[in-house]
Image (cartoon, rainbow over all chains, first blue to last red; front, side, top):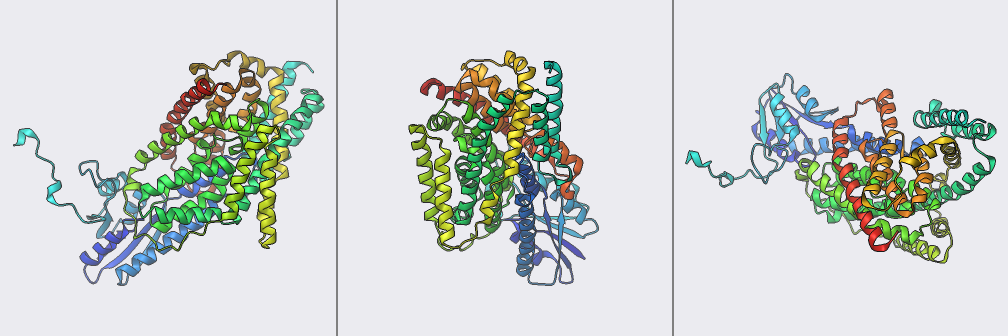
Length: 163
Length: 417
């Protein structure tokens, strides 16, 4: 059995904990991180917008690219340490929602942490990236709360005509 | 030379200069094409020699001023100013991405205003990325905030943006008056951006962060901060007594440079910020643009440009400036617009600045020309997701621009243009 845990800044510990708790003992666990190239490209673009400055070596985009790669590596190392059992790591670059769906092809389970506004629960409380992955994942999905799950007290009152 | 022929030649040369500045064939400095082009317009008589030398005398000190500010910014970075900002942000954000965004807005706005947009893009953005990574926060909103604020927070002082320095050189407004008139538009533009960012990046800002990192006390670079404060005071004093405020910037840079030398820290990076090809490029571009204006474009555009400080004409000037800045770049846009709006007084000049400074946020590369070229080149082997940045620009630019023009109009009516 193979399980993919999507490691994202902020919410990754919940994902690793879920993998530790729910993946059977003989599972191949893959910790997946996706770097979005947009961030470094935005810095490249901002520097390109400074017409006439020359000096490509001062372009902050290259620095950001290196920093993003280093951050991704640190994140995956920290996640592997938290998992505490044999696993493999995978680093991809591209649009996160598409890369995660592509990586999940052939997997038996995809674990991801909920994204979005957790204070107003409802149809739109799942962030657009999580929403896309849940809709298109080619395998079963385990969606976990990044923090303590809400109690049933957060349920809104039923609509009047159902009372 | 017959005016229409001269106009045709000047336009062709201007297009060549701008295309080469965006494309940079063979990695040449932009001046390689711009300087010969300026030579051609002078040699063919498309611009009178006297006008060309007046342009050089006007632009030279402006670029010198910018070069000194860039050195000052680099010296501040060498003194650890931006690292200190990063430590302060990491410490006081207390693991909350929304707090961090507020701090990034404050630091990026002040950096842009005092040390120019170059400092925010080149020196601050990497520090902001590192700070977000250290907190375990998602870096996107914070990095995008740096790029947006490098444009929309560059309204406050003449030194904040090269466009402002160029306008400052042609308008009769003093340094302090410029700041007084632009303070409200600056604050309003930043507030508008902040509200748009809070909503636009709600998902990333809602994500929890890892436990806040343990960081030691923030080492405040007192000497650099004190020098900057004195330089700002120097801007106010020099402009009141009628001296070019560039001297205050030079004094600040010399003090910090001497401090760095005494402490035997390398300053090669700082000296590199002074860039002769850049100076040559802007002066040559100025001469070619002047030839285009003098041979007919000025008259044509002058007829459609309103000359009044009522709100609708100010909005019109700002919108036209924003459109022009987005077509090619805000540097040629401001060179074209300044001689045309300058007769309209400080209000029209400042409205044009709002347009050319806030407008470039519509595209992530500052203009359509640069953007298209980057798409053609597919630089950095990725197909950047344009939709998101453009959507952010479409939300923030019109909001910030309209509100900033209203704020300028209020400032003009209360303080007086």
